[in-house]
Structures are given as structure tokens and as C-alpha cells.
Image (cartoon, rainbow, N blue to C red; front, side, top):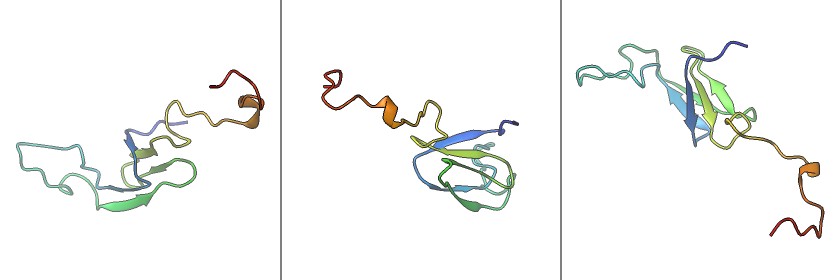
Length: 86
């Protein structure tokens, strides 16, 4: 699997990308000057979305694609009446 060039963590399921978000030069920043047209993207049940222009990946914090996220299954939960959970 090829890794995306940049990963951005976000707390919103709706994000926008113009390809030039991190570009700054001499205080004359213009959002689309060195990027691509601004597009709005929606993060789905996978927990991430890739920009079709620049391949930047937007990952929803706490979602299934977030680093360190692990989905629990019923076997991971303590049994009822188990004193191991306060």
C-alpha cells in the first residue's frame, strides 16, 4: 500500500482542501495560488477521506482510521459482575 503524502487529523467529518494550506511565502499567502481548486470532502465510515487532487488524507480523530484506534468486540468487555472494572 502506498502511503499518502500528508495526513491531517481533524475533528470534523466535513473538510476542505485547496492543496496549498501549508504554503506560506513572504506574507503574501494566496490559498489557490500554488495548489488546486478548493474542494469539500466528507469523511465516511472508514474514518478518512483522500483528496482527489493532491492525495492529502484527512483522518477523523477517534475514528476507525485514527492512529491507536482499536475497535472493541464483546469478548474484550469484562463479564457482568466482574470486579476488575470500577
